[in-house]
Length: 344
Image 1 (cartoon, rainbow, N blue to C red):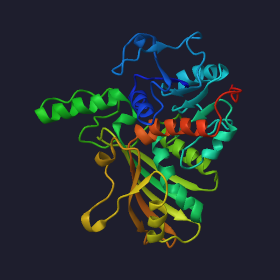
Image 2 (cartoon, rainbow, N blue to C red):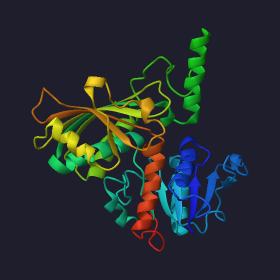
Image 3 (cartoon, helix red, strand yellow):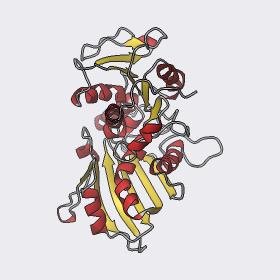
Image 4 (cartoon, rainbow, N blue to C red):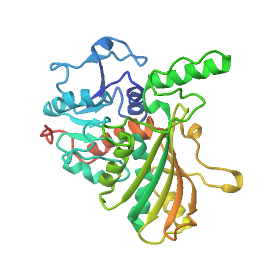
């Protein structure tokens, strides 16, 4: 039996994490799962009967795995402590993604990066995650010279409170009542599109979401030469991120050949029939683990370019599912126990 800590278990991703562990055979009774959250949530009994535990030096001992979805500050403080106590940490925050000592892993794309872990493994940003699953077969076959990506990101990427804010605004609009002032986003999200998802670091006209995708794409694919232009937008959709992707390849690749590559790749479901208007949608992807790809077509403006439409549930493959897949890979590769030397 393994002991698995889920840190941030009461949050949107944490709740899906617990469900995913159980669905993929890593839940009780075969494994002991301990949900962790803030002091104010300690003692709370979850719907599955588990009791929430607060983070403390005496509560983090004896774990094989610790899956974090509790924000960068919590991860920065507690991930090294779990690692020092012998657990392998799989972190969903942005805290460790840019650290050269920490593998940044998508299960179907670069599992070999796990071999070099020093106690902490990073999960990519959810929008990067689905993009990597779709691009890996193309990059492996013909290389990628340049990417132009526009994301249409759901509000659940910001958390439970953002979903509730969307619902509250929608109810007010439908009832003909005044829409409450936004608290989560800089503008009302219902019946709207916000043209910048994420925050603007000081002195930068790109958001942190956009910068993250640029950096993470190169790190995961192991190719610093890829040119990347990204625009991230927030849309009034509760679950699933959608992405319009223009891929300029190094060697020629037709849309038909790209479709064949994608149909044979792990983790991908191709939905692409213009005659019946069959293509991936956010609603259809919600609650699913696959990355859905459609609108696969040649770019008439460039002889080595393709257009893709990529959609995936940001709470599942974009966070929880990939983290659990990493846990499975760590088990399969014998990389749990005795390997952690901790990242400072």
